[in-house]
Length: 122
Length: 336
View (cartoon, each protein chain N blue to C red):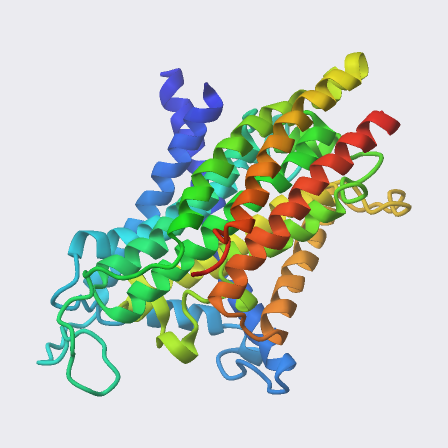
C-alpha cells in the first residue's frame, strides 16, 4: 500500500503546486479593465455566434465506438502478456493458440469494420 | 508518529521531484528554442543573460505577471480546471518513472523514484490518457469556435493512438513478464527490448508525438487554421501550464518511459559497459537523445491533416502493434 500512498501524496503535491501557480498569477498580475476584455476571440469581425456550445457534426462517432471495443480487448491482452513467458516454458502451444484464437476473432471484427468503412473519417 | 514521518519524507521528495522537473522543463524550453533557431538558421534567444541562458527565468516571470483574463461567457470552473487537468496528470507520470536502482549515501538508502508499484506501466498509460481531458475541457469551457474545434480534433487523434499504444506496450511486457518499470529495466541487462519489438517502438514513437501534440500531429493548435487552437482564450499562467505540461513535461517523461521499455533504461550501451559512467548518466543520456529526436521531428516535418492522422492510427499503427505481439510471442517461444 505504501506505493499507492506515495502516489497519492505526489498527486496532492502536484495539484497544490499547480494551483499555487495560478493563484500567484492572480495576485501578482496587474488588473487594467478594458471594455473589450471579456470579448470572445474572433478574427477582426463582430462575433457571429454568441456561443459555441451548439450541436456540431463530429466526424468520428464510429471511431469512438471502436475505441471502447478495442480498449476492452487490450485489457484482456495485457494480463496475458504479463504471464506469457512463465507459461510458455511449461506449455507454449496452449498459451499461444489460446490468445491467437482470441486475437483472430478481434481481427475478423477489425476487417469487417474496415470493409464497412467505419475507419474512414466521414 | 511514524505515519507523520512518512508523510513528511514523501512530501519533501515530491516537492524535490516537481521542482526538479520544473527547472528541467524550463531549460528544455531554452534547448528547444535554441535548437529550433539553428534548424531555421537564426540564433534563437540571445539577449537575456550570456547567450540567452537566463531566458527561461525571464519567460517564467513574464507569464506570472500577465493579466489573468477570463472572457465573459466561459465556463469559469472548467476554464481554470482545464489548466490543472493538463498539468497534474502529465507530472503524475513522473511518479512511476524510476531513475535508477536504490543507492546508499551516508548510511541512508535513497530511492531515485517516487513509487515502484507492480502496475507502473498501466498507471503511466492511464495518466497519459487523463491528461487529454485538459485539452478537451479547455476547448469546451472557452466557449469559442477555435478552441472547440481544437479540443475535438485532439480527442479524435487520441482515441486512435490510445488503442495502438495499448497493444504496442504488450510486447515489452511479454519480454519482461511484469508491469513494473524497474523490473522491465532489470530484464534488459543482456539484450535491449528494441530487438524483437522494433514495430512496437515505431508505434510508440508515433503515439508519443500524437499524445504530446508535437508537429506532424499538432492538429489541436494548428496555428495556421485555428489561431491558437485550444489555448486561444487563455492568458498568463493558465496558458503557461499547457505548453509546459504537454510539450516539455509530457515529452520528457514519455521519452523516459520509451527508453525504459526499449533501450534498457539505465543499463549501459552495449560494449561500453566497462566505462566508469554511473547508471543515471546513461539513463539521462538516452532520454536526452530521444527528446532531441522528437525536437528534430517537430522542427523539420510539416503538419498532417486530422483525417490523415486518424486513419494512419487505425489502418497502419493498429495492425503494426498486433503484428508485434505475434512476432514477440514466436521470439519468446524460440529463444526462451
